[in-house]
Length: 246
Image (cartoon, rainbow, N blue to C red; front, side, top):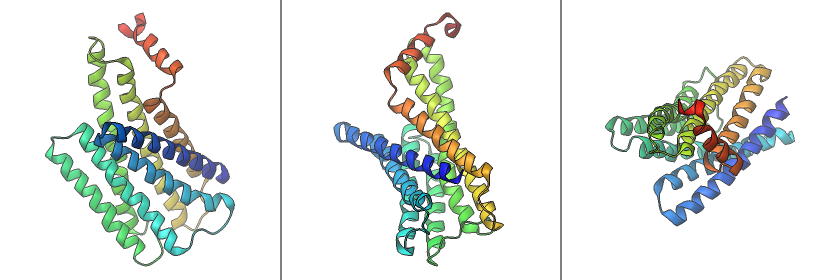
């Protein structure tokens, strides 16, 4: 079962990297900041998951300490453009959003320094710096889910008046579900830390939750950003059906 979780995370990392490449290519054409920020986040996430899971899947102890610490910073720094993306897209004019970005970024940077300063990262519930880092990367996952739910509800009302395309409404729903799946993945990190803190093997529940949330995230991102024709057609037909119109 552990091999399943590692393999799922590696496949997810490949998809994140592919999504990043497409978003960054789009940014080169449009010069819009959201595509660049989200593309950077997916690039860092993909590299982190790939570097973290490949050694475990292949059965060796891991990277040399210097590389392992650098891998930790890849994800920490990658969350920063994710926070900026959420603020820019959903709350560009709200002062509280600037404060939330600053708070989460501070958690990631301060905890990152504290965790890596000793040359060994301690992921246990007894380590307050791990919990600080966890808070820093969990905030954007919960935040994007909440914002997407709000926009999904408001865009659904506009869609009934013909002001918004059904596929756009569905994209907000998929982003809300993506945020929820990522939040569950963050919770699975706490379960992982619990197992490590008690010197136990990672439990079946933790492995299933981690692998399942990663797989769900991949499917949701695929449908949100690159909907295939059959899916786009299904959304359009569903939006114009008598039941959906009520």
